[in-house]
Length: 383
Image (cartoon, rainbow, N blue to C red; front, side, top):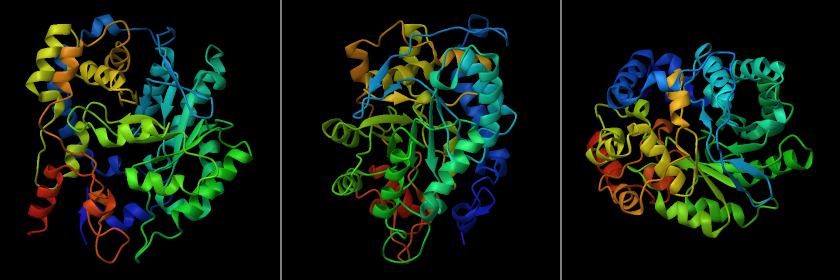
């Protein structure tokens, strides 16, 4: 059985909701990826410009998108994937003091209790309240058969009272056989009940293909208001973004800076990183911004909300410096036509095989996979 960062695929699928995140099992790989990230971006950040005291609050211009159910989601937020206890609390407290009002969480990240401690600490100070913050979380793969219990546990861990948005994290559960069990339809119907009962205000999906979205829409009583997927200049995901726009489904872009730490997910392969792209670096110099800010701004102008992860103060505050300037149409086109396209999170961690509902990454994404991913898959399985 293949292993990812010291964990078997089975362990990844079956670990309990509050177990340690994969990140805590992959410290050496994380440090390597973090070094790559700092090398490509931190050198251009003026840390003095973004310094703020721990007890200070500020505000930022943070536009919202109106979802199909009338709820308004802030277009800029903080991601918490791979955020370790201790680190993630500090990041969230810094973010909320710096004006962030959108925090993205997930049970699979294994840190929601730590995130909840940060919320509790900030809310007690009284300057930011629960109603001021948009909180998204996600249903873990092994919990499709216990949707209500999983959601209630997440709310308890986050000390959140309710969720603004609850997403189905992946359209799979880890079972063997020809079809996903329990069926995605059953899981969605249980999520609809969460809205009925006031546990969540909105529901949506994550890591779905256009085909899977259409299948869900064919039976959904409550339509998904949002889909969270990978989007950045090295994987524009344009077909899905356009498809969701036509269906009035908001798109949140995870990994808007190309997910440098996720390069560790590829076995014996170091994919190109968008923040090292010459065009991105050229524009960072032109606009007197860092490469991360260029990618974040591109995502916003691309029509999505963005949830970059950050843990240091300069990155937390610096990432939010994207609202008082624009990328010109000419430069936006340069970023929107970069030749290299590749999913950094293509689902390979789920060990697709003929014994499971999805045989390979192309099967899982219904063909919505760049050739670079398929070529790498063929090489790694010796085809």
